Image (cartoon, rainbow, N blue to C red; front, side):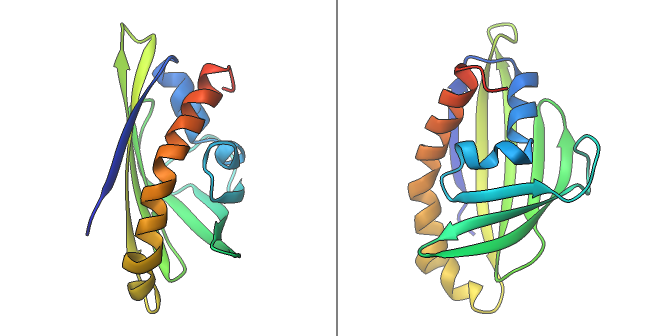
Length: 149
C-alpha cells in the first residue's frame, strides 16, 4: 500500500480543528470530491460512529460508509471504509503549535480495493486522491481560518 500523507498548519486551536473535520455536514465544504455527507448515528463522534459520504468519482456519484476506528480528541482519529469496491483508510493527527493557538493537521490516506476496486485503486483512485489532497488542505485551512468552526 502507498499511503498519501499531507500536512498543513492552521491558525486555529486543535479543539476547533477536530470539531470541524469530524463534523460530517462540513465535509463537502473542504473535500473537493465530497458531494454530501451525513452521520448515521447521533451524539458526539465516537469509535464506531458511521458517516455516509457520496463522492464524485469521475462523472459518477458513489456512496460509501466510513466508520471511526480510533478517536483521541482533539489529537487523532482514524476511519475506514466499510462497504463498496474501494474503501478508504484515513488517519488524522492534530499537533498543537504555539502553545495551542495553532495546529499542524496531518492526514494519511490509503485505499483497500475489493473486486473491481483492486484495479481501480492504482489506476484511478490513488492518482485522483493525490491530486485532490493539496486542494483539500488549502480548503481546510481557508475555512478554519475564516472562522468556519
